[in-house]
Image (cartoon, rainbow over all chains, first blue to last red; front, side):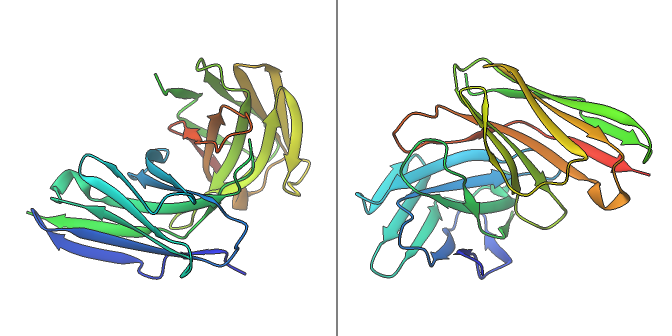
Length: 113
Length: 114
């Protein structure tokens, strides 16, 4: 049973436009959420996180929105750049030290120049 | 500095070989993790070390043997692997305190078992 779901395996966006990547979760015990970006043959790079006490966290071009009642989060990238082309993983965990991250299957973002 | 280093970058081994993967971090993190990632799949957790003690083993076969010699180092000893064990092996670390914890990943070791 997949606890973290990224239902779009791929997304194409024009350079300069907004990219919106979506993630849904089923486990109501999750209260800490992260987005990672991954290039081929490299490890995931941490992008941004959000705790369940917030509904929005912003860092430069990246904003994560959390809707707890819908068990849904999204990552907005604006403006999108060709270098943003990668696989984006959503991950979730419970708010205590060293609990395992549960990853979604990832969404491949292609930003077209 | 949020760097986790892993060596080697690539490893090819036969099914009878014994090899080790190494991971190092100098961020003062007290939790370290091994993940396995197959192509087009998310990372799958294998082991968690917390304060140099094994705290989680996700039912990993005994041909994978983790070791944490000190708080900065994490090894994964490999013996009698199967071709299906070929994957990207990722190490990660985090602070391991009571707060929500961000894990930082290394670049991975691409393992091929012949």
